[in-house]
Image (cartoon, rainbow, N blue to C red; front, side):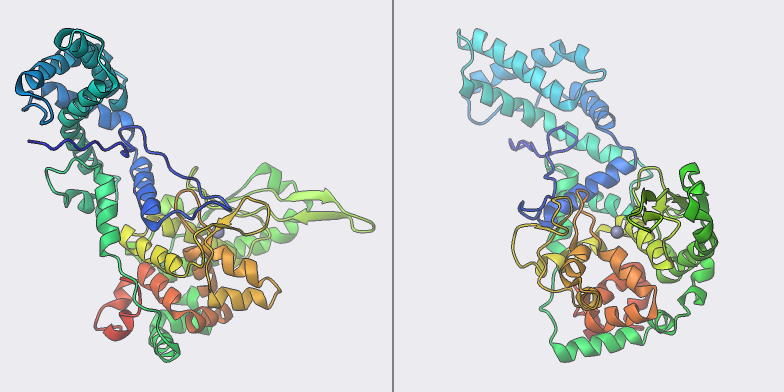
Length: 459
Ligand SMILES: [Zn+2]
């Protein structure tokens, strides 16, 4: 018999709330973020609640009643089942277009009303309603879970690693398959003790022996192996951007730099870890903000702030952006499409470096939250030279509602230029190595990378 184990946290059952990361609020746990990420992938693959609901309802209606609830005397259990069945049939008209949650609620209401009136000769009390609700859920949820698994298994666009996690589950579990997948990944992830100075230097050396790091240091990464595997971007400038005075001045450099950025991306990220091509190949040049200048200065141009929203499948940039910004924005797409296990390892680094449990306000405008990290050595050093040590440290630890961060983008941006690549590898080899392994798993095979050094990275 199925245990009564309500799962009110299932997104597909319509009632999971996702806390929005905000400055001053508690930092979301890595588990919460992982779950949010799995949900985003499922949504991105086109799975909607309706897709889950319909097969769940079909399965439910086809199901034969199983034995009664434990808490009630036998005759009442039986009676209750009769009422649940009757309510289920009475609610059949609701199936089309209804959510699973709506259906469960309706069945519960009807069954509770009849149960109270017939069995107890009065209106059902709160406690009795709860019993009915638990009974309806107990009978209903196995079918919802079965339907969820069916839909996940048959949706081609769901990443293979997520499908494998879902397929791994205990067949009788009533938990939301995504919750279970997140638990599985979180339980398997481990963060080793931070290496001491000597170990860090050794790790940096091991990384520097990799051909890709040699290419970064020599400034020839855009010509390195793998670079030719990248496709050229399709660049489109919005009308607003094209008519701006400064556009012509910068356009030539931009059209030269964007393809170089794409080649660096291809040289850094192995094909197995690249996002679907449509997510990186479309670049849109968006207009900058041009305001009248003060005093003798003609105009003041505020660069459009680049972004890589997955909506619309494009990377939006300013015509004034440089190669490293192109690499940075593509890095956001790379982060989203990393296997969840790799992504969890990055989260482990941030969570292990956390100073306090409250999110900080990066720029003091209440808009951009970041983990309160103790140290981000490479970024802190580089931006410290520009007098921006605090924001330089916090920005890579920024966290979005999706759970994505600035970690992969910032690290890939630093990998794209020799001076920053050196800082990244030498000052923060744990982060550099973790990002590199995520985007170049083959380089970390046991015959290519010292096993004892790989053990310094989160697993
Ligand atoms: Zn970014």
